[in-house]
Image 1 (cartoon, rainbow, N blue to C red):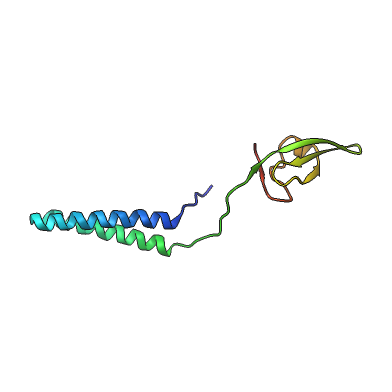
Image 2 (image 1 turned 180 degrees about the vertical axis):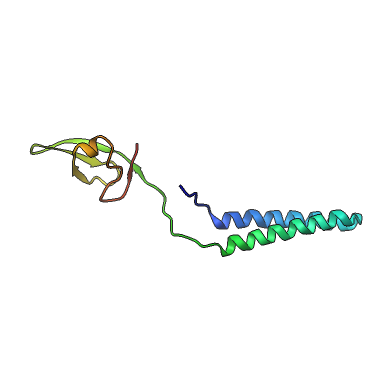
Length: 114
């Protein structure tokens, strides 16, 4: 299953790392340690590249998963019924619903896993 991240939060993390690398590179320039300046600038370039990749990455519209459960409410005539704990929608309870095989509410889309 894919993991979705907050790209803006990731970019902010990269920005913080970029600032730290800039400070490090400046400190190395002051100490005249050329090898460390090169390493700092390489790290800085890597963080800038990663930040640009995060900025340009394809995005999706994702919504939080709502979790609910089927609540037995009695019978409709001779057919047992269950109510969604999220939206209150009442559905006829067949074997699939009672056994957990129907794992979402057809009305609101809540995942029935509580």
